[in-house]
Length: 307
Image (tube, rainbow, N blue to C red; front, side, top):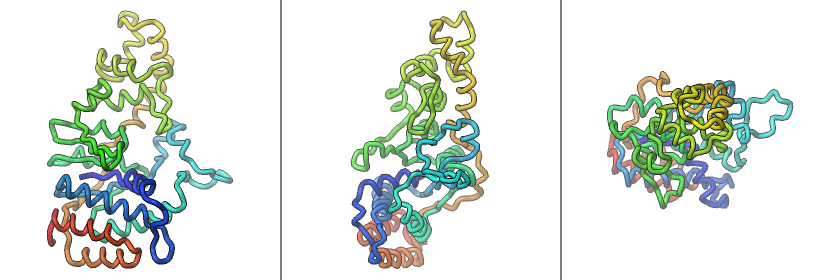
């Protein structure tokens, strides 16, 4: 099970009141919410391995070089322009991220990131190299591109909330969008995605993008058809594709998740040795994590047992 960790702790933060605090007044609603989410997922889906995939860079420089608007709407004010990109994150959540990291590591949950890459890229790499079925937990549609029914890679989507989890397979993607999961990145490139600051090819909407990919196979085929008078594409549509070709060829690299990061060996097997249980209990006392820590300790103990 691969967790899109930031997506989950943002959901936890917005789902629970900030009045949930530690004895020193530090908000811990996101910490407690994330622990409850993990406990629920482990109990319901019974993974043997668990990785908290981490955004070492939420807006990688190489993606911005390809598409300058990439996630630009999420930037905080940079003042003198010399500060690195800073994401707009509520201060009450920012204070909790180190506690989240400490809790995950104390529980023996593998936390994996990669320099100048997003959690999506870590997920893409681990999903591509896994020798067993994989569940990817995210609210991000971009990760539909890693779905592979043949290899048992699916998405557990939290987009509708933890009470209404959706299991997304290739069949589901085709039913929703009319494209195969392995063409989702091409589809998103053509259509665009405002949530990531990706404008798409002007004039090419969701239905048109799906129809073109269904007819011509992939992005290269669609763009080639736009340059070929014998393709049968209406003249206006072909003109839009030609006008947007340079953007599309550049943007698709930013849209596609990386699948070959040098992550090394990742020990993700779920286990709960006495030291991890003691560390979790100590954190629970320090930050008043109460039943949330109790539940995740119980879930991990049932899944992995003593190390």
